[in-house]
Structures are given as C-alpha cells and as structure tokens.
Image 1 (cartoon, rainbow over the protein chains, first blue to last red):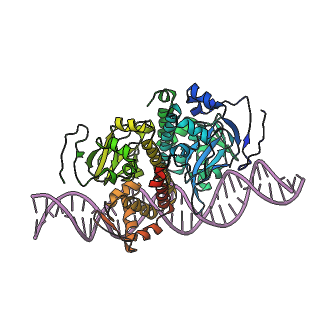
Image 2 (cartoon, chains in turn red, green, orange, cyan):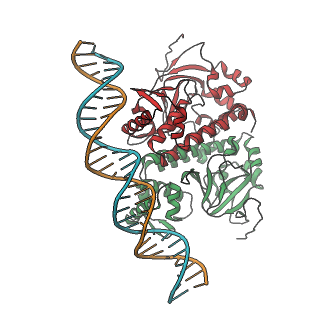
Image 3 (cartoon, each protein chain N blue to C red):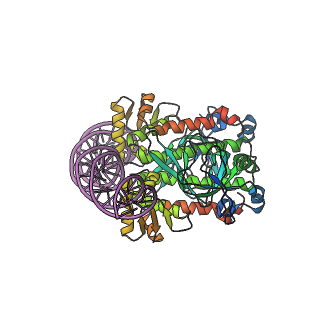
Length: 259
Length: 259
DNA sequence: TAAAAATGGTGCGATAGCGCACAAAGAGAT
DNA sequence: ATCTCTTTGTGCGCTATCGCACCATTTTTA
C-alpha cells in the first residue's frame, strides 16, 4: 500500500492515502448511491487514514468535511462537565459523520472520537451540501440514515436505563462486530468502559463471564468473538431493534424506492 | 368554545374541534414558517383535541398525519418486551410528531403517547410530504427540528447513564414546564415514574425532597413549580444542553437564514 | 536488559435504586 | 356521610454498580 503523508493544518494526525485496495463502495452508504450520483462526487472523495483516539468533531466545532468510514469506527459521545463520558451512538462503514451539516445546525453538542483506527472517505462540506440540495437520491439516503441513527440513539437511552452491564457489553460488541471484517476487535477494557460510561472493573467482570461461557476470548487489548449467536442470546433486545431498523431503512431494496 | 365531535374510524377519542381561541401559531414550528408557506397549508390544518393516554403512533404503524401540538404534550417512548418502558423524548408546542414521514422510514420502533391532554394541529401526511418536497423553508425547518430532537434523545441517553433520579426529575419537570402556559402540571407520580422508567417510590422520594426544599408543591396528581431557578440549579446539565440547542436551532433568527 | 507504563484481576465497603408489602390520606361516587 | 378507588408515604431486605486500593502480568520504552 502506497501511503502519502500530507501536511494538514488543523489535524496533523490525519493522513491522506492512496490505495488500490480501497473502494468507496466499502462504505455501505456510498455503495447504495446510484452510479450517476457516485460518479459526480467520486473525484472529490478523499481517502484518509485516521488513528485511534483522533477527535473528528468537537462540541460546537464547525464542520469542514463529512466522513464515510470504511474500516474506521467512530464513537459519538457526550463529555460531561465532570469529565465523565457516555456514548450516544457508533458510526462505521454503515454510516456517515457530519449529518448536522445538512440537517442545518452545522454542529452538535457531542464529540466524534475514533474508536477503531482505519480509513474513511471524506468529502468537503460544501460539495456534500451541493449534492444534498439537489433533493435527489443523496438527500433521501442521508435522511434515511439519520433516522436509523436516531433509532440507535434511542436504544442507547433505553438500554442505559434498563439493562445490565453484561447485556450492554453484548450489544456493544455485536454492533461493533457488524462494522468489522474480522471477528477480533482491538480494544482495551478501559476503552470499552469509557464508551459505555461504566467502570473498567464492570467490564472486566462482564467480559470474564462471557469468556468463561466460551462466547469470547481476550488478551490485553484484543477481544475475539467465538460465538456470535451466543452473544446475541445474551444481549438485550436493543441490539436486534437497531440492527433490524438499519436493515429496514438502508437495505438496497428500501433505498432504491423513492419515498 | 364550540366543540364538534367527528366520527373517526381508527381512533374515536380524537375529536376535531373549532375554536376562535386557537391559532396555528401557538405551535412554535408553525409560527416560524414564512407567511407564504403557512398560507398554503392553513386550510388543511385540522385542530384536534387529544386526551391523556391516547396513543398517536404505534411501533411500526403507518403514519396518516403529522401533529403540531399547541397545548398537548406527547411522550416518545419505547416499550420493552417485558412491559417496562422508557421515555426517549418529549414533544410539545416546540415540535412536531411524525418526522419519520419525511425522513423516509414512515414509522419507528417507538410509541407516541399523550402525556398531557390538549390540542394539536394535524396535517395529512400526503400534504406534509408535498410541502417538504418543495425543498424550501418547510424542509429546512423540519430538518432543524429533527436535529434538535436528536440532541434531546442524546441527552436522555447520557442522563439515564449518569444522573440521579432527583436530577432527572428536575430536568423532566423543567422540560415539561417549558411546554406549558402555567407553572402547574397535572400528572401523578406514577405517570412520571413511567416516563423516566423508574419506580414510583423513587419519584415519591425525589419529589418529597424538592417539596421540602420549597422548589415545588404537590397534591394528588398536581405539581406546582414554585422556584424555577432552584430547580434548574438542582437539575443536571442535560436540561441546559437541550434548551440551548433548541434555541440555537429554532430561534427565529436561525430559521430565517437559509442553511 | 532493566525500568516504566499499560492492562487486567480482585477484594471490600458504600450507595442508589429495586421489588414488595402495607398503611395513610385524598377525591369522587352512591 | 359512607364507601371505594386512586394516589402517596414508608419500611425492609436485595442487588447491581460504584469508588477505591492494590497487585500481577504483559508490553513498551529507555
């Protein structure tokens, strides 16, 4: 893979790369666009590699680009005054970052932090708005995605209210796994705890249970899922609700139809 | 007030009424529309009175109308498999019900239940879509509202994770108060507990504390807020975040500008 | 290769909230 | 005025989670 580093004024860690292995269609939203639309923006899609921990958007910051993850996973979360944090939703290759650009607010009170380093295609905000304002397939797709994201956020709220740490961990692992090509995630218990807004020890205990049950195995910063359906049966209904709603709203059949 | 009861196939409790006292501009979204747009839909806005407990939308149900509350308050919530429930967001005169109509999904996994009986203006789904698809002020306003609603849902998630019942009660009282003309809400502790997804006894205790502190006073199904700023200082930051974001996105100045 | 840092395991007391049972106090109905 | 139903108050044991402290092990750095 040929990697080209580019000086970047605001955020030096982001690196523009070129690669034959990458294709915009690795992002499922870009893949769902009609060829005509994708061709129109293809030359302006810039492949970037983004490392773990990078902050893509800050609370109140202005958006320069929208990001379509391919291999990266980004966590939307809120940072409280006392420093505690809670994840609101995750975004991977099924989604896009920066919806407030076309929703009209241009920013949100939340943060977007990279949870799994990897690649995204990005598009200049102005170009995204241009395409959105054609009020065609791009607009319809983005609005459908936004609705699916709302379901994910809603279930986060429900799950935070009613479900145990173990159930939430199962949900979170499954949602993350759906965005990865392998069944191994590179992630410390501390980081997962931060996502779920619980103590690290709580994750240690829940993950220990899952390992003893043979559903996962882990070693320092690596979790391998051994039994996916076992995890599903141990997760709360929230995972199923979110997954089903994403499928309903964003399957090819659904997005092909006009609304 | 002259009240006209109308036979209504699906939901007999909803009553179409006519009244000189009512004005679409009592709903702040309708009030924010340019005169030209409002005139176009004015004749199709139907004033309806909706009683406490009425279910406006069910999980998976098809939308016939969008509803713009004036005096009613509607709770969006999710009903779990075991019968427990949790509020995702509330909608009053600042909002609209039925956004999934124009977002493209036409339904959601959640329910919309009337929390405070009152009036809404409703508009046939087809007409709303027609106006939305002009891609003009109506569309921009609806998308801005949707973004504000997402912030409310997000803060519900954060609040459920990190804040005490008392803090959540303060937040909820303040958000509800902002949608009412008086400082008294008609609401049993049991109902509030259902909204927040906690035990009724938890509300009894928290409300008792607030009453002893002189911030509210209550009697069987009626809560009067005596000290609004006292409640605000006792609430978590979530209330402020939501309120500020609604103001930012939906103040007249913001909505007048094109995005 | 030694030191330092990161990561995960474990124990323990504190606490917020739950589930349940039942009593007390309004408010409406007869 | 009495009865009944709804609503609120209270007590009690239970559980999940928290906050903290400390150790062991693995990985990285010097």
